[in-house]
View 1 (tube, rainbow, N blue to C red):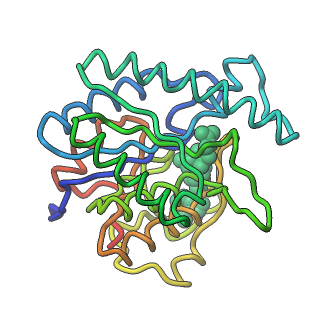
View 2 (spheres, rainbow, N blue to C red):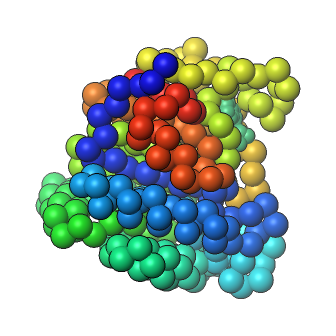
Length: 263
Ligand SMILES: Nc1ncnc2c1ncn2[C@@H]1O[C@H](COP(=O)(O)OP(=O)(O)O)[C@@H](O)[C@H]1O
Ligand SMILES: N[C@@H](CCC(=O)OP(=O)(O)O)C(=O)O
């Protein structure tokens, strides 16, 4: 059955697992597809914001490292290196489709302090009004997790839902390395079944969620459910789908029953 979706303003979140191959190299095909799909959506009058992970994954590849360093300053340095590389790849690929982008790096405290909150919402509005696609990531180089000053979102699943609810998006499309939400962690249970529609997220739903399956990803399913819960509370919807081929977004927008619809 086709889905009826409201999708005038859409946030798309792509995880590291979509952007970086398991061997650590960059999936340029996926980035190119994303640029193509998002540019097409933009040209058809939709407001689109991309929340992209991958700074650390791309940084590791750029520096020829196989593993995330343990020390925080080194991780933050890798993020600085990777973010600039990632955004220059996006810029180049979007330019092929004559689509301009703008980089927005956020920390959690921006949404806590009223003035910075207002400023960042105005920035999103101004970018969208000029037909520019904002590409958002956490500001990994400065975000810290300290008791008196929490600046870290920690994962981009929740960051994407915070952005989506704040800018009044109807739909959050969350692309990952899995076809949707299953009734058990598919890594551990070969009989796990895909759930096509979850109307509300409660403890029972969380009980089905497991951790991340990939080397570079964070959060796993729990943070995706938290994002879905946030969207539903704000009267929005979220679709979790496989980002292996990002042109799946065309099917999602058309209302085809792919992935898991939340809400
Ligand atoms: N119930 C579940 N349904 C689907 N995937 C699950 C479930 N529980 C755990 N997972 C794991 O969560 C992974 C997706 O999370 P993550 O690795 O953080 O991806 P991303 O990098 O896209 O954010 C899946 O590949 C899967 O291994
Ligand atoms: N801000 C980090 C991403 C953190 C994150 O949530 O990663 P993922 O689980 O792959 O979406 C980065 O760009 O590497």
